[in-house]
Length: 239
Image (tube, rainbow, N blue to C red; front, top):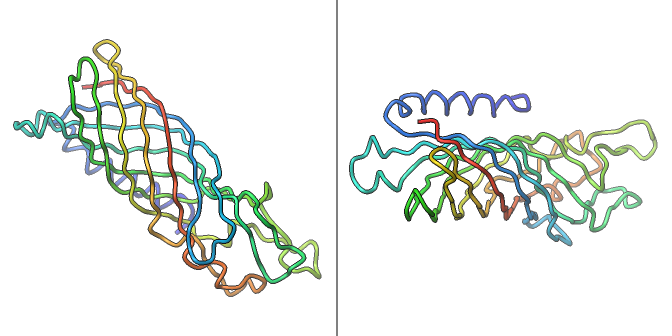
């Protein structure tokens, strides 16, 4: 599957699933942006430390208050988001040609991410609310740089023979995401929010290819992403 095709398919699926619910719900749209603190984990990750990055994109939330008549309906909503973000780590990048080994360098992954979250809000919606959220996320790898470079020589005898670092990693990531935040209304339609989350990758983002003869398969095993993110944003109530 080509890059971003998975994301397009997921977006379409979410829209089709959300369409019937919109008829019986209150929904809002918004924008968010903030910072990420990310690292990598796994048996093949060495000399790993956190890397600072960013996140920015859109938010869609719909409350089931009108569809669920109990008190549960007043606090429960579903939220889907679409945003760009960076993950990765400062870590060693190792392969067979020892003259090319890079130690403690930034490995910067840029993803298009879609989380789907259950959200529970507590407090007075007209004054101040605290909320928690939890769910899953799906990501498509948009770009990758190692020490600021997109590609490298993979045949030390042919300097013009280069391969993108992107080709040594899987195109997708997925995992669990959860966090909490506060929301403050501004008038009848707008609401500002401050959000903090943790994302735990469940998939191996390394992808060994037989054509990559200069990198051992063991160096691409069990590489998983971990991210702490903080963001601010604003929501607009449509219905």
